[in-house]
Amino acid sequence: MSHLMNTYSRQPVAFARGEGAWLWDEEGRQYLDAVAGVAVNGLGHAHPKLVQAICEQAKTLIHTSNLYRVTRQEELADRLCAISGMDSVFLCNSGCEANEAMIKLARLYGHQKGIDNPAIIVMEKSFHGRTLATLSATGNRKVQAGFEPLVSGFVRVPYNDVPAIEQVAAHNQNVVAIMVEPVQGEGGVNTPEAEYLKHLRAICDRQGWLLMLDEVQTGIGRTGQWFGHQHTQAVPDVMALAKGLGSGVPVGACLARGVAADVFKPGNHGSTFGGNPLACAAALATLDAIEQEGLLANVRETGAFIRDGLAEGLKGVAGVVQVRGQGLLIGVELDRPCGDLVARARDKGLLINVTVDNVVRLLPPLVMSRQEAQQLLDILVPLIREFLGA
Image 1 (cartoon, rainbow, N blue to C red):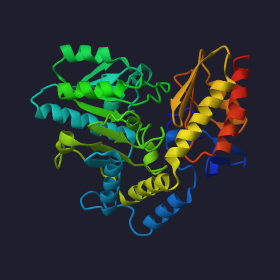
Image 2 (image 1 turned 45 degrees about the vertical axis):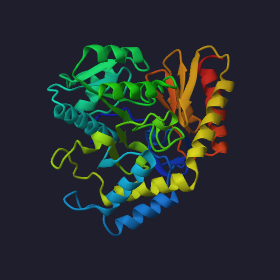
Image 3 (image 1 turned 180 degrees about the vertical axis):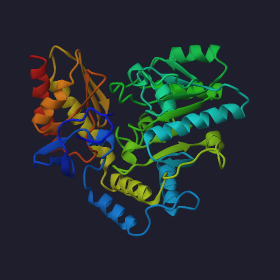
């Protein structure tokens, strides 16, 4: 009997090692990993540049705390701002912490403008984390249930619905920000219309609101650009990162620019572990590898190959609603619950994920090759067809 708290419905497999896009379990069985630690292991497993950076850093300093300057933090902040166009960075440990920082920043921004009860517009079907504030911002009653009373100060509207936001703007003087994912990952790989973020940017500029992007899942190359919003050139005021930033080493970041970059002052926010030398070394090695190995282009090309292969292989199959996504964030929506596909795929040596009950979500490592992508298709397409009785 395990002494672990019963918070996960774990699959009956434990992995012993990994290399690239592959994992091996304790019995030596091999699996093609199309989950990548839920969009975390962008460099795959045991990437030599990452392993070397972590080992070298661990030999000198792992942690000193934010009571002192941390040179690695400064290097990472410089790199993140260079690729994003943002002005300042707060480093933390996870996506929900990065989103918490965004929420706190928005509230402080509102108070500094004289708004006593600042509100943030959030979206239906969104997912921002499991801390109390990020849980309250999340648009999923299933993950909120049992944790009431929720944190107030959020105004919820449908995703990809600009008129709904205009309605809020016309009637709510307490709004100070919009918090949104460029693509909703947990919500079903929901992709908005091409001009959606640009419209939100224009509304925020007109209203004096902050545009805050949760790029925890879409950031660090997952969509084929450094950040999901770069497909539209709608630059945020605040942005949250985590997941792929450290390639498995916990690290998150809240980036800000313009007026938002100067909202926090000493004492307003902090983190004990945030931005320690080990985490920063992993993040810097991740950014180096993505750049040096041309992984953004690989994500675009391999992602398109997988989406096209799924669309062609499932064409005309009754029960397939849509194949969608961006880069290597891919969803296959079915017309029925399909959680059984996770075990069926695992039995065939492929690791996949199902979200919102009926969307097969693929999050392969950014290093996945064309040959590995074809292997994914060769397993998954027949499985889905068989599952749907095609």
